[in-house]
Image (cartoon, rainbow, N blue to C red; front, side, top):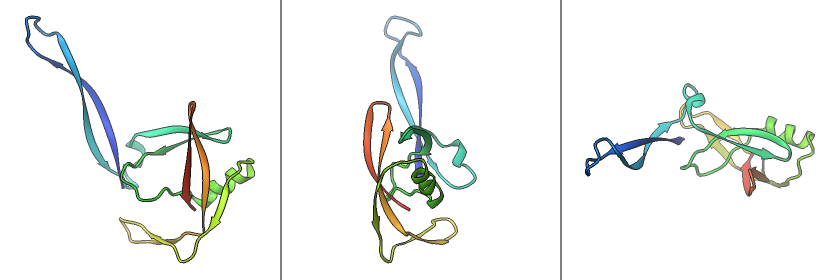
Length: 123
């Protein structure tokens, strides 16, 4: 899994005004996410129902994953979702090759301020 960390910096060019900030650039540094550096990766805050959560955004992921514990908490808090069964789906962790059976997939709405995104999660 990887996430992106961006940094803004100014670029000084000499076009008659010594030290004048002419333009800004974004530098992108890829971070490889593992258990040791998870807390230092950029996270986004969003709402599911009326509860705020934050998560690492992985721009290269092939699937969005939600823990069964968090999904059960969302259901207890009255969050509505479409739940679909899965058959024979197993996820294998990249770092320690540990296997996890996917029991279901759910369709949830994430709210980023006034933007609503419908997302399918494996649970």
